[in-house]
Image (spheres, rainbow, N blue to C red):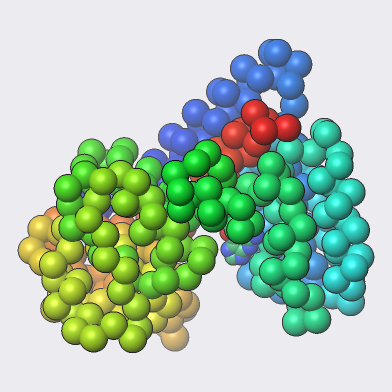
Amino acid sequence: MAKIIDGKAISAQIRDEVKQKVSALRQEGKEIALAVIQVGTDPASGVYVNNKKKACAYVGIQSLSYELPEETTEDELLALVEKLNGTDSCHGILVQLPLPAHINADNIIRAISPKKDVDGFHPMSAGALCIGEPGFVSCTPAGIIQLLKRSGIGIAGKRCVVVGRSNIVGKPAALLLLRENGTVTVAHSRTADLREICRQADILVVAIGKPKFINREYIKEGAVVIDVGIHRQENGKLCGDVDFEDVSEVCGAITPVPGGVGPMTIAMLMENCLQAVSFT
Ligand code: GUN
């Protein structure tokens, strides 16, 4: 049976480390604040936003909550972002996605100051990651690296396969694994011989967005499997992009869903907020 990579425990450890550092900053008279903006009342977004605010409260970061109506215009949202860009007491700005269809999310992301871009979605942040300069890193991929490192799994020299090429997960995950000296392949839904490519992976990161898509036929014996997917099944239970029961019989280590990658995202957001203080 594979080793279970416990994202709940590792994320709790990171949150506690952030809490201590926030407390040390407070001793120096520095308070951290994160603006959390939600437009509309999408229930899933509401849950995420609430969890982010709760994490802020736990570590001692002030959350500035903006719950805006669905009919908020793009110009109104841009004006709020601009105001927060110019507010020294606000260190990070998070606009929860998805936004209503009448608002262009790219325009909003680009309007956030790269110094306050704690989601790491701004093109400047993405570019900095690409060329190895300091900047905010998207939280989920940053969390994946922490899961590996804190489980004692080396990346250098390993064959890493990332399945998925989104700007938020797949691409930054590939760049981070490369930064750690992994040998990285990015595969996706249009990849020919996906199974064979996945079978070469020492570390397989799956963010393809299809429930239980990866079974044991995609896995090299002893491989490390990181499952980024999260889906609600018909029986009400959650599952990932990986068929956990099947794959865990052949792989060496695996993240469960829930309790794997998911909790890491918010922990890394807290870490990014901490980093934001040195930028402002
Ligand atoms: N929607 C789903 N995940 C995220 C995230 O990490 N950040 C933001 N801003 N919106 C999201």
